[in-house]
Amino acid sequence: MKSSYHPHIMEIIVRVVFVLTLVNFGFLNGQVYDVLKFGAKGDGTTDDSEAFVEAWKAMCSSGGSNKTLLVPSDNTFLLQPLVFQGPCNSPSVQVQLEGKIVAPLNKAAWSDFKSYEWVSFNKIIGLTVLGSGTINGRGSSFWEANMPASKRPTQLHFEGCNNLEINGITSFDSPRNHISLTDCRQVKITQIKLIAPGDSPNTDGIDISTSTDVEIYDTIVGTGDDCVALNSGSINISIARMRCGPGHGISVGSLGKDGEESIVENVQVTNCTFNDTNNGARIKTWPNGKGYARNIVFMDIMLTETKNPIIIDQQYIDKGRIDVEESSAVAISNVTFTDFHGTSRQDEIIKIDCSEVTCCKDIVLDRINITTVDGNKPIVECSNAYGNSTNAYDGCLKTQ
Image 1 (cartoon, rainbow, N blue to C red):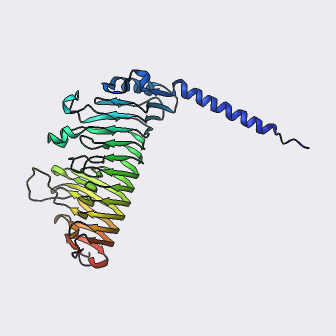
Image 2 (spheres, rainbow, N blue to C red):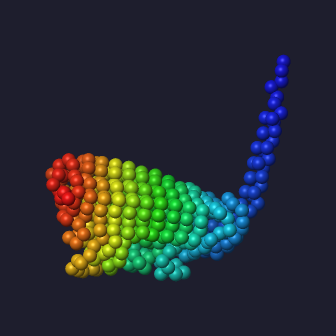
Image 3 (cartoon, rainbow, N blue to C red):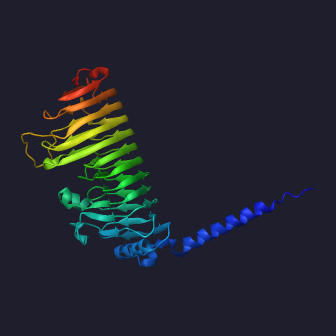
């Protein structure tokens, strides 16, 4: 009988074992930087900030690839405000969050409670933040003090981080917004959860500014403010399969505050659900702003008791502001709302209130099927808006 032994198969097996051995050797010898080995206690009461920064510096300054800063499971790490500074010598680095990170117990215990950010990542290329761990900002003492949003820290701040990925983590009770992206390029955010009470002020899920090519998909966001806020400079943004609620929906803006020039374009929001939110799809601009918001699509949206399912508000005035005479406005054009289904908490299901100065142009309302919770006839209002609509909403938008 012929033997089934093949020398080349054995050679392949030997090579695979050799490669795996090398990978394992590298993993155990300098590839993983465990914060516990840099002095972190992980007891939830000791300030572990210095250990985290030292672990980061060691990882960031080393060459090679596949570098990982490990926040291990079964530990709780207390952190004061800190910055993970780049650029790093490695082309790709990751922070693997498996344990718990907590902020100081209350505002008084912060080393600098006036810090604008709690945990910051600055100018890092090829950064991945991933894991099944949690980060808890213990923000209630900030909310209860009625501090202005501008005086409260963001939970996770990413600035100048290109080729960024955030995957799997859960964020609780940020003093302000949970995640902010500023001057970032090529970003993917997926499988994360951002959670805060529905009445917690200004706890946006994800705020985006001056960032391009951002993909957000398969996420759960339930907070006290916008699930996502697209501020000026948000370009090429895709949001898909987000479960939003409670909160204020997904918002473009606010734009044009204090007469500033704002730009948002090429935004796609698809296959998202809004559950018990104050708004669904929203665009909000201040009077006397400049710039434009254009090429925006909200498509395949499911609503459950949403207060303002579809809203464009060009008369947005925040608290403490007074109405002013309008001489300019952010120009809104080429905006599509299509395939909306579900229920509204109020009778007005669509409100498109545009500026007399610029008007809204090329607005599309298509396949809108929204009923009211109380069974009343839905109300649709359009002002200074041009475009096309179907269903029972013909005539709301002016034709060109």
